[in-house]
Length: 272
Ligand SMILES: [Zn+2]
Ligand SMILES: [Zn+2]
Ligand SMILES: [Zn+2]
Image 1 (cartoon, rainbow, N blue to C red):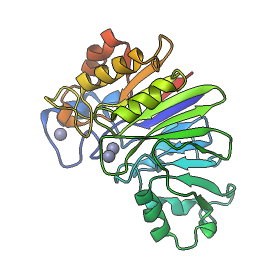
Image 2 (cartoon, rainbow, N blue to C red; image 1 turned 180 degrees about the vertical axis):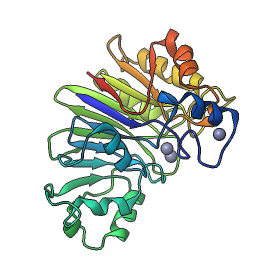
Image 3 (tube, rainbow, N blue to C red; image 1 turned 90 degrees about the vertical axis):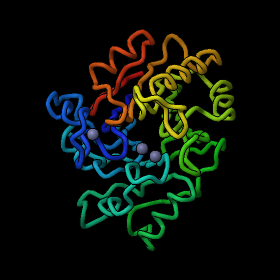
Image 4 (cartoon, rainbow, N blue to C red; image 1 turned 30 degrees about the vertical axis):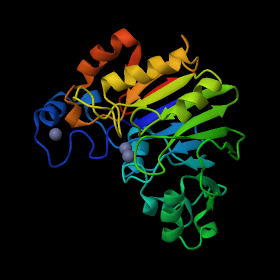
């Protein structure tokens, strides 16, 4: 499996538009991996995770498109992860090569947002599936299984364990320290090939509620290792960074190096 991580910032992006804090000024000065857009990822070319406000820019920057997407799965309802109006472009006349209907999965809140935006979902090329229920597996049109897991974040937020052709991805954001049911389910499941962690708080003092900081990411990775979900082969990646976390990309890389956790940057490709 190949995961392209298009955006690696928290909701306000980094640099943040109305901010001249030290971390934003330094990110503007250094550029490169320090310029972070709102999150979203693509598994191979057909399974899109989240559809935030920067999605079209992600396609332009990477030379990719979403024409092969058969499944769209949402983690939660926050505006950096879903902008329902942007789904309008999946149907004619906004595409002249319309894909088959896209299976859309999300929690009840996400489903409601999409259904309110598009009274005629079929005309939009969207096949909205029943709301995801934590710990209940669903199967995608291409035969992948998605296990939604509870998160410590906005009500109904989900972490995603996606299994495709014998490989398993854990898409772990947005979340604070994982609820016991999530740790148990991951421990009971197959070893993870790729695991992504929310690191919104960076080097901030934090109790790791709602999001994680560096310490929380390391703690969760170690807990998953203890339970057998993380192995020597698991590719560990921290993402979803905020200027409030203070550490720039280069310093984040240094902080995570001893833990063998990679620091995501916009456009990063992870293969397993
Ligand atoms: Zn977010
Ligand atoms: Zn700032
Ligand atoms: Zn969120």
